[in-house]
Length: 319
Image 1 (cartoon, rainbow, N blue to C red):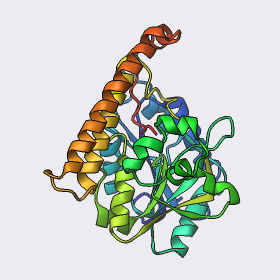
Image 2: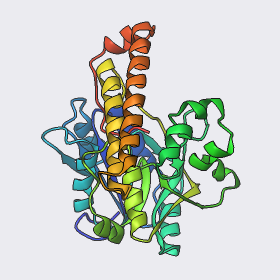
Image 3: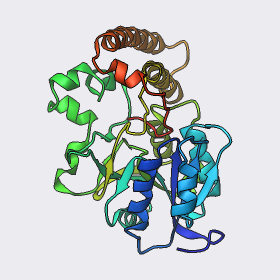
């Protein structure tokens, strides 16, 4: 590990909010499997109330810790980390992820050998060993029908339409492959690409990685997934969707993010008929989701258990 004032090969940036135990596991997985290249770890803590910052100071003094006075949120925290990072490659990592051996070297080596690639993601596993749906085509109208959150995807998970949208099946042969976007829970980007593309869009929570990968693609660079790089991703364990307020807010954020993404990348003028179709579709989907979630909250046996705990809004980005 080099001095924090010196340039390094890899900057690992982690945005954290009230995920002390998960963050400790994450950091242990980094320092327990040291890469062969020089690296630094930047932890951006969003005024956590669970002693996350104190844990980092006492257990991982080699990490660069930044404590924000308030919860800035996922995008702003990572943007601050981008500005502070000194690495040739910047690796966005969720605090609820645990790296398996060789992860950092594998991603860095791929970027070094493929200068036409602007971002590379890893294979993400659930705790039970199943592969997460974290590699996808860029969002489109098709996504509404066969995407991860669609009803058709639940009915026909192996149809060719679904597999054209959700690309994790391509990891089966272990070979790197091109993707529309990969999860920012584990995404490595060359520093010069970040300089060209700019900061994460602070209006977004959902679609933030899709938006950034699309902007990278707009520069002529491609996005890849490298299955040889592996991590365990414990989605929502930090409390991202704990509490009914967070779950309803998630519905609003998802549909708002979908509109923002379309607005930025459709290339259509405001008067185009496609806008009416998209707004009508998103509005109808939001109302249907709202009714479904309300019924689920009222009938769920776990509702009182969830809501008896203090709501904790994790800064890790949802999938």
